[in-house]
Length: 571
Picture: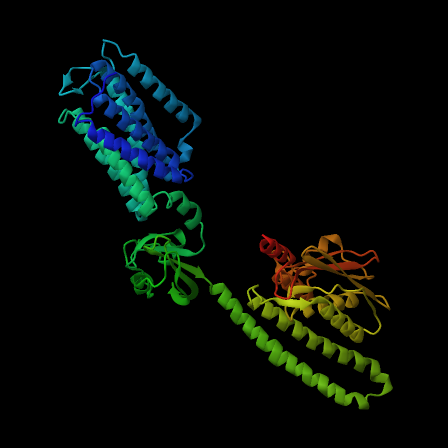
């Protein structure tokens, strides 16, 4: 097979070298969703550039014809690859049934058989004569059937991409690259089919297409901004999301954002004009780096005559161009906080103050109580003290709720807390017996409100025990990074079907039947501390409440972190 590198072959050699280099660079993105069809297309371009360069360089007709037949395999790869890329890119993989895939494989095989068995009848093509060293074939009816199928595959891909553009104009750049480059390729092929130029343009225009793909992938994140990502993330977000340009113009919105603006089209408008906010100048200033937050604040907006509150997060894209504004509706949270603030004021200032006055006045009356009323007096005073304790518990509960579960934690000495709370319980309930086993000298993640956990559990063990001399047993065990504190009693116990409800868990929360404020506070606090609490059956016939807390060191780190740090130091 004699070859001669002629000036006509040089463009194809350059195209081959270029597309091979681009294929290697694009291989790094092979794990992306639409990359499989994309790489099949580029593989076809590499093969086409090689066979055309060899065909043009060959000096005898038989060799040129040999390489010409390989051209059909390359074109099949390109057309099928482009269609597959469009199907995956637009999240239409349901179209790729087993029958469709099998038909595509059979099509490629039949085309190769037709090309290599093409006889003198010229049903597929006729070799024709050499013109200035170029093989200019004459196409038969089977070729035009083949060409129609290949173009049809491209049309399917273009239709899917244009459908995406019509649905979401925010993908105009991606659609422009993918449709514009294939349009260039088809214009070149049409010019060659019409014999306006003898030179085979397909390999050259396709190399330009691959180069444009590469620039779009690297610079415009062509494969990073797949519509499927938008469908599965943005579409299902409760937050209103606005995608902005560097000038603050809206290029895309999700359904929640459409609802926020009254279901009208706002694409290409400035977000400041749409929502009466001042964000365009913030985006244009661009003080933050790529992927960093530009602004974070609360906004108040009037929506259909109703005042609503939003938490705004404005962040720049990772590539440094444009930004995304996310509006999280916090109206319910703000209303809840206002209600809790009012309740807190009533509990702390009204009820608690009045009860303190009653309790203080009651103490002044103690010398004047005759023996016949001593029991009633004692019960009245105990009730007043209990109401004061309840107001303190409610205050702590409200502080926990308004902290949104993000309490500031610090290492707390468990032995000191337990010893103090057990001693306090002995003083409050002299008729009950409290047994505290040895407590390991460990620190747990918590804060000053950890005492409320044990106060409520110890009180609960006595209050719900109808015995004359209630018994309460407290013991601790440490395992790995956790310590379990078991508080058992000899009372009536808790039925299995109520062991979740008593903590206020489930849809009803604190309104669940059988829920006490104290146990709800215990559950809320232990969860905020990163621990857990549950109830089991005690060996003594009653209930045993188990509190699990994280063991930390003096700096707040867990044992596992300390071990990892020590290992790192040794290495």
